[in-house]
View 1 (cartoon, rainbow, N blue to C red):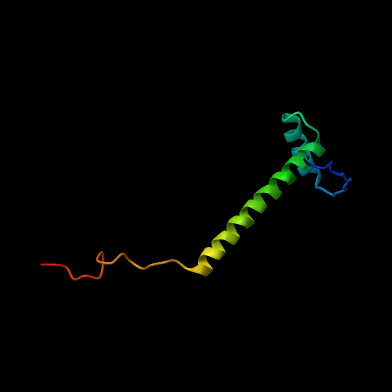
View 2 (view 1 turned 90 degrees about the horizontal axis):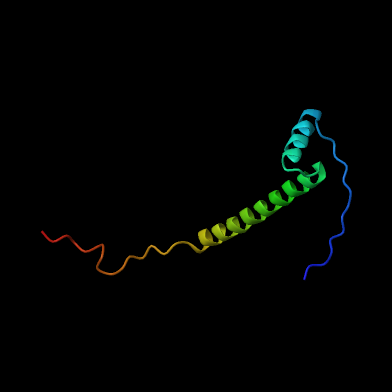
Length: 81
């Protein structure tokens, strides 16, 4: 069960032409500019968390190293001619 989130107002300065584009995109989705911005920020945070998790796993794998031991008899035996 999730607890109710406390919301806080934030004031930002944004270029007028960018705001115009954001307004148009929000209108296409039939949501407010505020809801549009919240959705995009949540998406960014989710993607960043996913990236960071994947990066930590990759770094851990690199630190452990890869097992390059070959199966006996597969390589290293002289070719029969």
